[in-house]
Length: 266
Image (cartoon, rainbow, N blue to C red):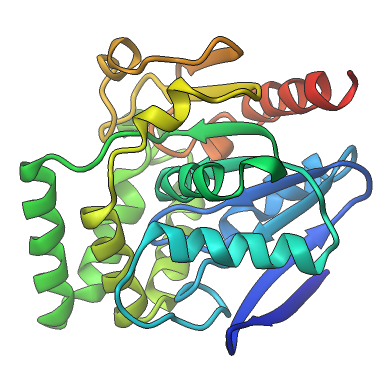
């Protein structure tokens, strides 16, 4: 069921389906809640699943500057409050992982579990910040469609691009639907986000880290760089790039379902 709320005069769109304990799916860069649709449909057979359109994405309004991960996290919090949800497992894909960490920092009492899905807890390097600025310049120069098309393909492993050709086209369509302002806001928020590695170090709820073995954006060395909390499960998707919930949907579903059941069946 698609629903909308208003938070500080900002419309936030989200989808909720299923019954039971709550699992929140937060989409990544150049994505919307629609990116999770098939995955959320399957997960909702056991849980109440909420997929949020982050501000500036999908049918949600864009917020004003400064663009921050905390503002994105506030929109997730507003949705949970509107649904009278006291606690939830928060799953963040890529940029959504940065939002999930900001949520964990600001609303720890609402967290039952946390999952970073193809994401990292660190801030951008200087090199990465420069790349964000270059993409912003390309967007402002009228090249949004090219940026969206290139990204929609790059998030898949090279040997998966033909098999998921239709999904790549669907991802490109979703990306292009996002306004230039919305894309620039997310690029700015990612560029300027702070390092939240310390949030993981002090995390007191179960944590799940999902890594794609063929991910061109996150190198395997990150597994050694992260100081994982005690209650950690790590899963490596051997045949996935940056879109494991599509490239290895059944395996990803099993991993996340088991993680959530372990939390909620206590």
